[in-house]
Length: 392
Image (cartoon, rainbow, N blue to C red; front, side, top):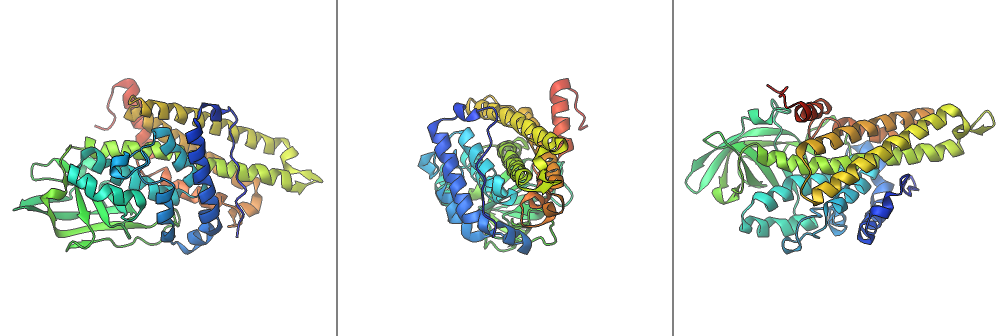
């Protein structure tokens, strides 16, 4: 069982910009991760099992809907606090962060922003504690980067609607109590609807054979003439902009989380470089190894500065979707580069479960694809800076 020795790295003294509350939130999350998750995460990944017993603990440290107001059961924290928690979770494992990120940004966020008062009171307090878990249904078997082409739909039938279709690659689906599903109404407009486990015709088969996010549960959502009360429709907003606004929140959390994965790999490689000797000296004394470490911490520091500023903009209500896209793409790409250099520094040991690097590398191959692929985010930035739409 691996001992978690991570302490953190802050080359540009960004801690001086954090409040005491921010630091306390980070310390609380870090200590919980070290005690409850780090000792079991390698075994969970090897077995391809999500440790569901961790869910109440995630609720206790405020990982579910950190920015949700206290009147709905949330801690009412700012956006930088949300980012800090996501960073600490993904520092351990991307799958752990995914579970919390989906719950926060893709389930609680749309209910809070677009749900009725009754929906908010009914779902949010239970989601905040982890008593109730949710998932987000947007991606379909034939519609990933083009969510507007979705075929999942519902038709009115008295006080209910009849929902048909399927969603794929859905984190938390196998155990979720509710699913926030995006489907087209009879007018062809996209709307969110809350589907509850146990509704006839609703199933959530688990997806198997993953070599990435192995300590996270992924499944499908199947809707076969599912009767859902109209009262479960999120009436606050329709159109594709509604689910995309949820993705903005999730992508923001990923931008922070990817830094956590990179920091863990850098920390591992740095420590190893001082302990591993070749030719009668530690490998960290060799120029090529120092080059790798220097480039790692430089890129991590640039990502930290980018993301901290983005957090400020989010708190001020000024962050644009394009700015969030830039941070998500840059930080995940950076984290993948760091994991690969760190793996090389550890040589053969880098591919073993004795160290976290290979697990992070495999996880990030999912993170670089979900919530908008690397290439799609490049096109979002391209559209923003040129005003010319490459998607048409």
